[in-house]
Length: 72
Image (cartoon, rainbow, N blue to C red):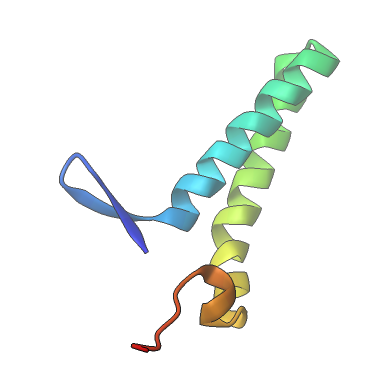
């Protein structure tokens, strides 16, 4: 599944990874009030999700992703 952004097709998992990294960054910055741990943790979570989400999505059956392939 892709989303068109500025004429480029982006896989949804990449956008989810970026959003997750931003949320972790903001939460860590709010709690720690320090930029260094917030940036490091947000980037680490975003990279882990960017690399891990495609593998998780390949393991899930199509029906659980809302992609029912039956025509009936």
